[in-house]
Image (cartoon, rainbow, N blue to C red; front, side, top):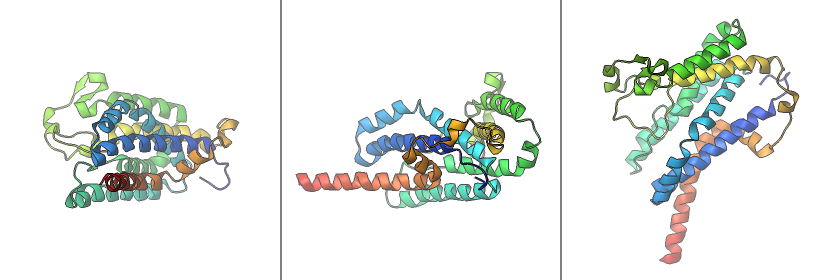
Length: 256
């Protein structure tokens, strides 16, 4: 954020909350994957119904912050590069050491990085559009393209050709084959429009017109996580794996 603007603490706290929820969610998946306890998978699947809510919060806030960033395009390239690193580790390195099933292709970092790059390029145009109109149009586009992975647009009124869904070349856009799997996957469509919704809403933040209570601190730990969300995302899986493997090792030693 710009140094001459007050920091909107609530944005950090809400982003921190979304990251914390993701870490808890992934922990149950890892309990099933690492330790082999089926109840971990069960809890993970039950919580999946809430996942879009947490990520919608995260993506909208990222969109708002893109309006406050000194260089959204450069930050987008950094985040996208981090997404490529995640894919390299999970899809190339981990399978070679016998850890298969956790491959990530175009996860949240790849999606966010793409959204930042696109928004950065479009920022001169975005700044000329009335923010209320932009928010409405973005919300409509998000809702009307939400079913793209199922081959539908405009709430089912438009059916996309099934031939598009025979390969994974268009996977970043939300179009993929029935054999495609990814442990974490967020397509540019429809999530770009959710990001743009935040970018348009960010005009109020840029003008310093958010409610006064949003500039006050409410939860320092969540704010800290939110301010360092990229590092928490990159570190959370290795840390969870390390803790779970250590727990298994300790249990084996105790009962050996």
